[in-house]
Image (cartoon, rainbow, N blue to C red; front, top):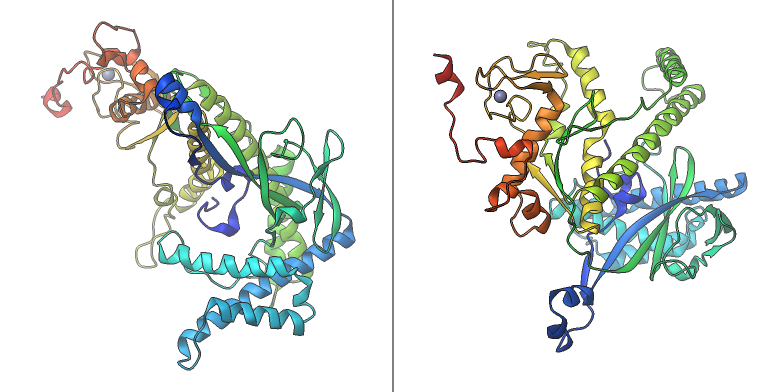
Length: 487
Ligand SMILES: [Zn+2]
């Protein structure tokens, strides 16, 4: 699961979004005349996003970018070494100005460090200080050395005027990359301010990132839009699962095929066995051989393909959900706690360790945090809301009578209420989604326009029939506790 907080591991364009900034464009007497609607229109929202595109590079250009990427990583490591050394040496005091002077001097004296354009080198310094700021403010761990193997290579192009973005054909655009030249990139979206049909706004910079599938460019965009009107769509509760990835409280599901084809899975197993064999041949402490590295690269390509399919499905599904529903309720899951290993300690070994590892992999493959992150910004963009509710007992409680009776969850898929007065039975995930919907109604702030139209039981004279209207808690009826009923 990618950590969306760390700046080096943002996997896709949507993860790069910044919280929208609200800008008051005009204020004064005109606002009073038209009422609320008019006031909403005068508030423009500056929306910052990232847009990632594939670069079409020749092998020489790839070599140049690789050199730049390695120089940027080396610059970071040298900076980190120098900065952390300064703390242990009382005569020397590190400061951003001094760091800047050293970087300028190093670029003059070391030709391989000068491969990195001056602007990109400055950006490494900025990113390094930002990493410390994130650490001190509790958002991320302390910055560390970047490993050649594990870190993702990236080079910054901070100034948009260097980019000279141009659209060539329907499918291709052109961008100027420092020290590389003009490069074509895949045009999948109108970048703000570049063409006549593009939305108003501008590109503020870019970053080149090396993914498993090659170099990509991430444009930083800033679009000026009107503040969204309240989303009037209905509300829904969503249960996250594995057998059914998304179960909705309206009884529908959002499903996907396996992320890898059977052939791909077989090839991956074969490659993993091959890597294990090659690892065994390695002497202790020796670096990985070229053959082993090549096998690792092949495995990484299959995994990256599977991840792209996941992200694509998540984007399409969350866009559809955010278009349809105004308020979406979801469980507030502590995912990192859910995927802890069952291995235990040497003196107290855990049981069913392999099964738990398989479950952990299945949870990780669903990437629930990314679904929730996509929904958060997509709903916000459309005037909708995502409400997180406590996950406790949502899959064990019956959504019709509100009781948690033992043995209700008959199997993975089926839920049958054991309350003799109720006896509801159906899909277990739908039941959980209905419970989440009920909790969302309780939690959703009443000033949400969508929530008010959606929670008819709270309004007099509006008896719309939803399954939750018959919920005893919604009608203020308190049912006996299950333990008392069994006596
Ligand atoms: Zn029941």
